[in-house]
Image 1: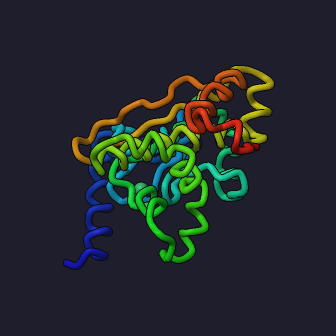
Image 2: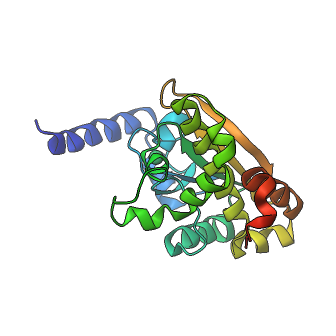
Amino acid sequence: MNNYQRLFANNKAWATSVRETDPTYFERRAASQAPHFFFIGCCDSRVPAELLTGAKPGEIFTHRNIANQAHPNDLSMLAALEYAVEFLDVKHVLICGHYGCGGVKAATLPQGHGVVDHWLHVVRDVYRWNADELAAIPDEEGRAHRLVELNVLEQVFQLSRTPVVQRAWAKGKRPVISGLVYDIHDGMLKEVVAGLDSEDKARQLRSQVTGPVSAEKPRT
Ligand code: CO
């Protein structure tokens, strides 16, 4: 059996096993979805949102892109965000980065990776804004890990700038936005920013990413 055939075999085994333990499961899921979370993660195949959180189908609305970004001009992300917040009424939005992220690493290297170089320009900015802090970390892995965390903070901030979140916050303190990092070495999730639910908290977060040089670097 090749990998493609194995997909179908595994799928059949999974669907059969779910039906055996819960005969009306698919019937209920087909009727509606009411996820608690909107998850923005990296494309990396080692970071499966449902598997690492034990979530079942119907519990996490998901968007993934390289380096788990919330670009303000990414129509795909914005459409998913709008649907999640305004129609599905999710309470919580998660931006989840991961240590060992090839996208974040690529943003620290000379360009030449193709289209992804354009996609990574915000991560490259984060790297530049925090060059001093990163240079002070003695080991390469430590620097890479810190940049992954800083990127999550920046993406949470970017998300807070979107009209969808601004509109929602004007009406009430939701959705709450959290920034997480998944450690591919031990399977654990770590919280790097929690409970962002207001303009004041978003402003405080911005200063964590841009640091003391923020005044010299205009931001939107
Ligand atoms: Co990644």
